[in-house]
Amino acid sequence: MLSFSKYVLALTIYTATKVPSVVDLHSLQHRLPDVLRKTDLHKLHSDLMSRLPSSPSKWHVMELLYNCLPERFSHANSTDMCVLHSVKEDLANMIAPLIFRPITRWPFYAFLGGAMFCLLASSTCHLLSCHSERVSYIMLRLDYAGIAALISTSFYPPVYYSFMCDPFFCNLYLGFITILGISTVLVSLLPVFQSPEFRVVRASLFFGMGFSGAAPILHKLIIFWDQPEALHTTGYEVLMGLLYGLGALVYATRIPERWMPGKFDIAGHSHQLFHVLVVAGAFTHYRAGLVYLKWRDIEGC
Image (cartoon, rainbow, N blue to C red; front, top):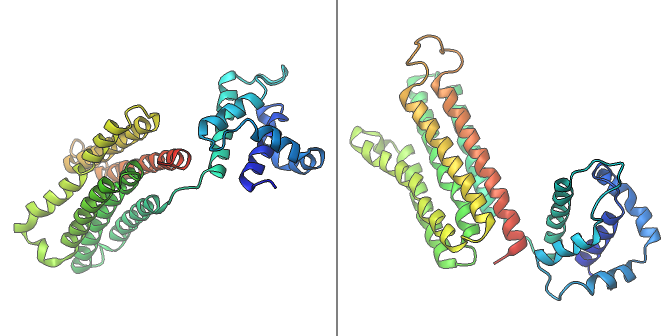
């Protein structure tokens, strides 16, 4: 009896061998019924599974795909070989999660929740802060809490997926950033911490959150220096930090309105640029999260 995952693997590989060009890939779903009628799936399954080891890895799947897919398409098609390579890799990455059990998604969702809360809090602040001095004060505190939530939850995916096989460091890093994040949110919201004497404390907490990600990222690079996914995600994380840092710099220095007062009162002023850079940084981190999920779904521990 065919297991579901191996059945899908066999069926997908067989169907892929019948696809004459990249352009026809979108018609794959319409060809499945015809393939099912004309194919002895049990014979196909036996042939393919005889070429897979008992515990197939991503690379076994990739090798099988490369052997099964034709080395080039019809001459009428001008598809480049690099496109063909990409198609094969994408097929392997789609099939592999059917064989391996997907990992938990909660760290990724925690980041998405933190990002959405931050942007929602900021939008609410801009919408309602003009109501009164009291409402403006509350909205500003909420805005700071949203920033703290975004920064702290941003470290959940890289920390969890980098150290999911090492519970000690995973819990250590996650616990540290969680405590910092909760402390910063409370300091941002509670009126007792809004007096001038706590200004250094507030700034130190935000600064500490921002730099608390350096240790797990460096640790990840030391452990997985030979893994391309580690370098790929680190590149995204460095870009995210640069975007956030540039946004903070633009916001603090009031560029460009400080150079031409009155010219950017409606559009193009520093606060708008700051928000654009924050969204760009969050999207960059989202892309890094997708790499983490793909990596751990396929490789596991």
